[in-house]
Length: 408
Image (cartoon, rainbow, N blue to C red; front, side, top):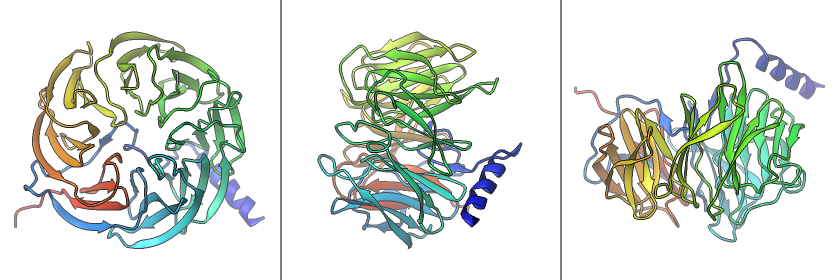
C-alpha cells in the first residue's frame, strides 16, 4: 500500500502545472553536446589541466558518466556482468549494483549513458535491459527487457541508446516488428503505447525530443534504414527519411534548431539538413553533404556553423549550416565533440583531448594532451560539470579541473 501511494504521489507531482523535472542525461541538457558552463580555462598546460582524481575499477565500457549536483553515475562490465556505479564528486564509491549480463562479443562493455530524473536513474544495458533504480542506493524499482518483454531484435554491437524521459514517460526502441518504438510509464515500467513505425531495426542512436510551440512533441531518432519522427503522445509515425546508401552504424543524436533538423552520419549518408513543417508532420531535404560526417562522435551547432570530426580523411571541420559546404578544417583525428564556454572539446580516437577555438567557422586547436591511462578504444564522449572535465577510457574515469582560477 505504501509503495502504491508513493507512485501515486510521484504521478500527481509530475502532473502539477509549472513542475519542472531535473534531468541529467546524455550530451547535456538537451542532448545537443552543449554544456552551459562558464569561467573555464581557455588554454591548458602542456601536460593538460590538473588531474583531480582517477578511478580505475569500472571494468570494460564506452558509456559516458552522468554527473548530478552531488553524484557521478557510470556503468561498467566485469567478467560479462554489468554494474552501475555511484561515486561522490571526490571519486569515492557510494554504491555498486549489478545490472545483468553485458555485451562481450565485440567491443565488450556497456554503451549507454544513464539518465537521472530527480531521485530515479534509468539505464539501458547492451542486452536490452531497461532498468529504473533509486538514485540514493541503487535499489531496483522495475525493469523491462526489450528482447524478452518487448519482442525486440538486438543489433550487431548491442543496444546503445541512452534512455529519453519526458514527463511520466520513458521512450525506448526495441526494434521489433510490432514494437519498433515503445513508451513506458517511467514510474512503473508499464507500456503506454507501442508503434510499428517503419518496422525497422534499432540502431545505435540515442533519441531526442522536438518541442513545438503548440505543445506538439516529436520523438526523433535514427533507425537502421530511416530517420523517423514519431508523435510522442500517441506513437503515430509522422514522417520518415530513408538512408539511400548502405551502412548500419548510425550513432549520432540529431540536432534541432529553429525549425531545422541536422544529422551527422558517416554510416553512408554524410551530413543532412531537413526542414520541419510548422505542425511537425512533414519534412523536406534542404541539403546533403555525402563527404562529411563521423561515425559516433556527434557534432554541435554554434551560430551559423556545425562543428565536428570527419571520419576520412581524419580532421576537425566546420560546415556552413545554411549550405552544407565545408567552411574550414584543421588536422586532428576523428573523435567526440562537445562545447562549453565558447570552446570546443574533442576527444579523439587516438586518445588525444583537444581544446579548439571555433573562430566563427575557422577552428583553431589551442591545446592538447594525451590520455595515457585506461583500456581499449577511446570512444566515450567527454562530460563537463561544475568546472570539471570527465573522461572515461575503458576501466578508468578521469576528472580534470578546467575551472579558471581567480588571481589572489
